[in-house]
Length: 419
Image (tube, rainbow, N blue to C red; front, side, top):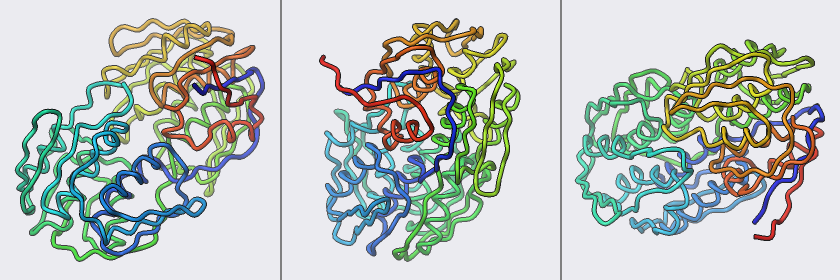
């Protein structure tokens, strides 16, 4: 089993780059099934989730290729509508394939998706949206069996789910008639998917607002496209810089996508400078507690940054309250941070974080991708060595995180543990 060995206590300093976002690249890969012409996506990091999605595409008959940071997908020869169970259970994002495959072939047979253990994350909103478009869906023995000719409809999302909004968007662009999605998710990744689909010939309006209008019947064509840069990876690097009392500049980080995070970093006393090409964080004194941090759909504070911010707040002067409103089981990192000397009390979805003067290295285990990133932040700021186990989960969203952190001066290396 691979792990990270981190010797902390040294400020991070220097420049890193934000590459294509995992949460943007995955739906774009899924959407490529809709096209019979090649798609080229540039600036795509080599992530475990991206590799698994490419395997899913290949299992459907698509051809894929990677050249450095660029991916090419040719879905013209795709013929299969059945998703291999072994692949779909490895990642939550396999559910993105449901809408495009159903739209392309008129049928789809999938198993329930896997992913990080951060809560139930039901897929009922995905299925509700596809049913509204005319899909006949049967759930049995862990399989989702869909068929039917899709047609436009007015759809109201009971919750602004990012994945469900994206699935309906992809299914609707080639459906007959127009579709209106009410209470749609407004995340930047939604806007990015709409931009990609429009580049391919679709007609999608309103992305980034609560109402998205899709003119159906599009004749899609191939394109070359640069996915949105990763606001979560960029935010993680900024938080790591602040936690270590360092000076870190993240090139290509988009401040307009990160306002909630930047506001909390400023509240904690960090020096934030926004440039046209990126964001810089500087911190030379002890952090200050934030009164309350609550996760919420965009433009609220992102749930994917909650763990990293909690790691930061363990070292702040005073008491902070962190409320997780998106997922019911996303506090696993609190117990691991406590092993490093943090003072955290968790009750349900609420954590009370009393800042301590210093964290100390410890052997800890991550249970999900973002918790793993948070433990790296804490370890970089702690005194002594930390060993972080189960880093395959971190690889799902970070392209060799140890290389990026090492380039900023972090003492981190990947090691092999004897189980």
